[in-house]
Length: 139
Image (cartoon, rainbow, N blue to C red; front, side):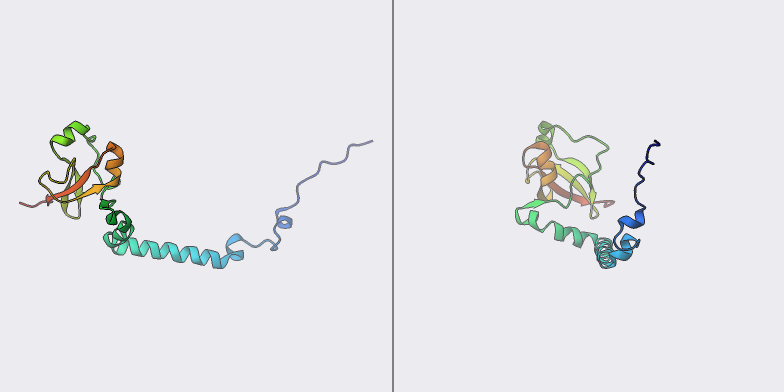
């Protein structure tokens, strides 16, 4: 007797209870909401990035910590100094908002607007501050 023919999986159209429609057509409300949220987020971020980021930073600001300047904004072409060097002098880590930004071991090292940085404090395991210095290009 001949062996029965091998079973083939059913066509994809039989697996789709909606009759073969696409995901987006079947879930148009979900897709419309996702597109709306993506556009709104993009507009909020690109129209006023500092205001958008400050809203995200409210929780950290209430604790006296800053997430406004961290790993993503730092210019790390040079490695961060060891803790001992950071205690002796602040370390230039980039620019933000038209000002030079320094990493400092304490708030009272001669710079203005020092805020504790969650990112760099986590890295060093001790409170570390990001402070603003002079204006970029200032004379």
